[in-house]
Image 1: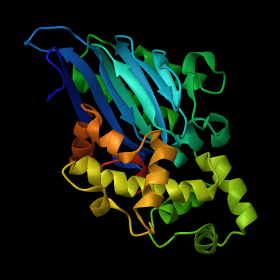
Image 2 (image 1 turned 180 degrees about the horizontal axis):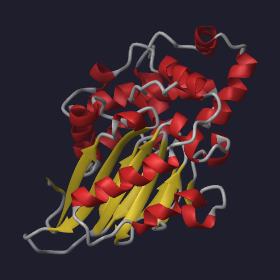
Image 3 (image 1 turned 45 degrees about the vertical axis):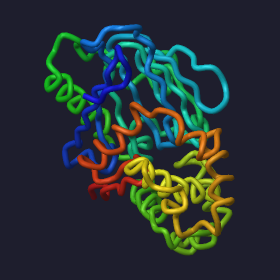
Image 4 (image 1 turned 60 degrees about the vertical axis):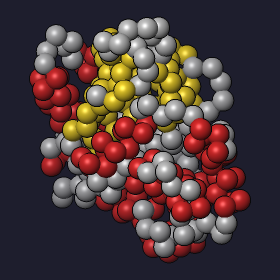
Length: 300
């Protein structure tokens, strides 16, 4: 349990999926906000989630609010799919009980199969979107069951939903692994590594990742830097910079583009959820943030 305020505390727990689901899912995680024993005014927890791949959230109890990029946080549905993001997501959480599923691009191809660009920087009510309705059985997770039973039920449902292979799975995983390579610093580097023309890569990237390759490369180098700071907030930003950055000014421009604020402003804000999540995720999954997660190869 991570102390968050005088009246509320955050509980975070990450679970690795079974071996057969690891090409498609990074982790399943429990995120609860609970009243602690100290009493006092129960101000909601507030934090800013960095850009990610796809994410599915199941709200068992409570009323979360969130927004991607500029704008006021709005109520989150009980089963919400967030597409790939290139902006920070601000969220406000009163006491609540939730589960989340980190979904990789190959997982999106199996679960949904629609162009990722259509869902980029968006949150969607699963039960109101015809292309996401197959995920609606996840609303049946029982609130009265134990945490272990809830976790097992989520993995059982996901195994069924992810059973059918999708097109281009091997290409998707190969491209995602190429993005993780710090030596892929330009679109030309990425196209050469994947043996694609830049035009083909552009179409492929928008379809399976949601964004153009240049933006994805910027997002990777930014998150490699941010992850270092999240794990050790005592660091100076200059110490956290990825080698792809020419200087701190370039990093600051990327920071404002992706987080909607400068690095100094971000560092001064409390991060009761993301600070704990980075360390917990690193301990379980080996990476502090989802976008740096190395996908397993799909079967076959």
